Image: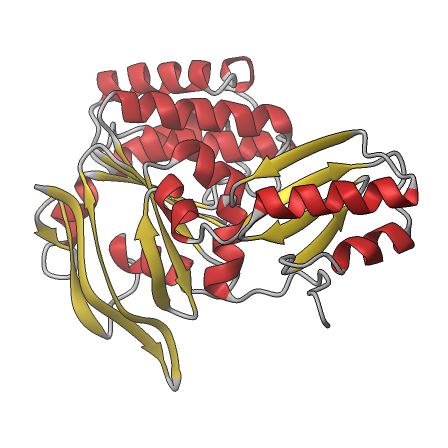
Length: 316
């Protein structure tokens, strides 16, 4: 049985189509990434899948239960961590966990055991009796995730779980996601953090303007745009004249300057590397390091969504 089965899902708000005939399947035990720029339809999709918003068209099932017709049963199997905090600031961390557990009808002994385990996991036990209004953003986010896990769900929905967090909270949350998945929990993760998706997800769906652009493993998505390979040159200082000279090398489709690094995008990295070194030798400029790189998941994301990073394109 699939953890999530989505068929022809559509959501319209007046004349705006936020999600347009989206279909995908998430097997049990998978970390499934749902990537897209702001306004792409990520949060609308997750609101439908968690029974908060009704779809205009299409169907979605959670562990075999229709999210519209069997909402309560479907929701009993899931944990939900929304992008915006659902914490009560005037309650303590412990009280927030107890309240959430009661909503899920978790028994007293079980909820107290689960709450202690989760507070330890998220390094919040020493603050369990403190009111949440004094917590940092990272601590609040960790508590929100603990609340989403208090009912020991089979399926966890995470909407932008690490957005804007400190490094410590980010690492804790990623480790918890991996550990949960190792124990068989299916994770549906919406994010615009390419690095996060690449590090965590078994498969990734890229959504743009309400439509799925691609679904596959991160590695296969990278291979699908093999032409986005590059030669990376590291300089002590790359002058505008050097960058312009690199622009003129045959076979280079784009030159991107990133600090002391210059990336030359090309379908022929070997040929471009040879030509670049010959041209640099003539100018007397020596790079500190040279690397060839395949496409990154960020390159795939940019290519499929058509986003303009503001970098120079050759000939423009």
